[in-house]
Length: 125
Image (tube, rainbow, N blue to C red; front, side, top):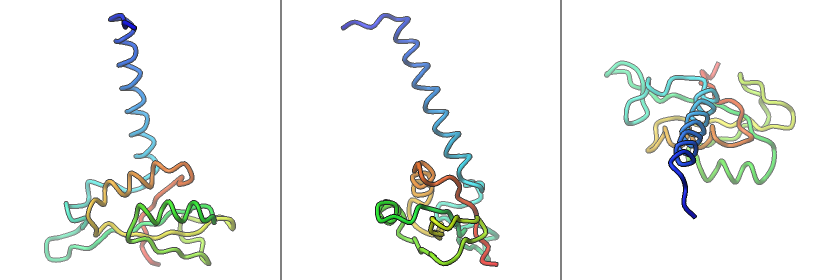
């Protein structure tokens, strides 16, 4: 099957659009600026670097827990609290932090999951 230049151009434009749409969706899910973090996942002044802690909600199901556990090694599940993010009664509050290798990729993987609607910074208040 031979693809004409016109069809190739349309396919390329569609692929670029879908890529950009995916990045916008992920960026909209993560409620803080990843550029605040250095390569080690830390933020702040040189003598006061600290990890950024985050929280998100997932359905209270074995499949969801298994999926996020495979992605984020810093995962802590707090089933009895809605957190600042306001998890519903059928959801679990999940906590993690950025002081880990590949923190950006981990956050992007979590944000891409269909059942994670928001990831917000956690201040432990």
